Amino acid sequence: MPIYAYRCNKCWESFELLVGVTAQDAELRCPECGSAEIKKRPSTFGVSVSSSSDSGCSNGSCGTGFCPTR
Image 1 (cartoon, rainbow, N blue to C red):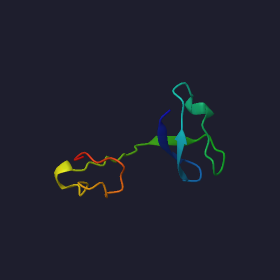
Image 2 (cartoon, rainbow, N blue to C red; image 1 turned 30 degrees about the horizontal axis):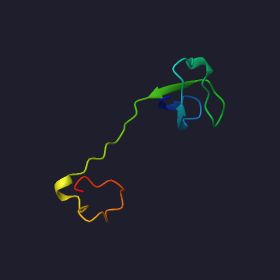
Image 3 (cartoon, rainbow, N blue to C red; image 1 turned 90 degrees about the vertical axis):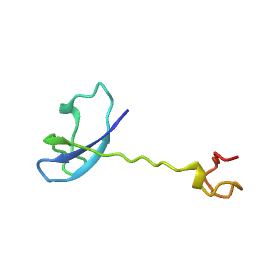
Image 4 (spheres, helix red, strand yellow; image 1 turned 45 degrees about the horizontal axis):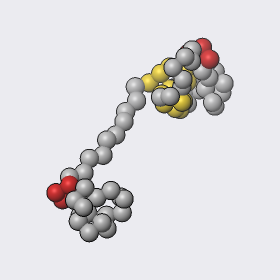
């Protein structure tokens, strides 16, 4: 299930909800005031990429548990 960002149009609270694909917008409510007047907001996500040539993992001491140079 995806997590969506919302803002309440009544109390202006920003929050995130884990929403099933079959959920209707009418079922969703602000956790702060209980209002159904909420609007879905654009959300962002992050991606972390590391370089195996300069990872510092050659001896397994990087602490990630995954060392591509081993």
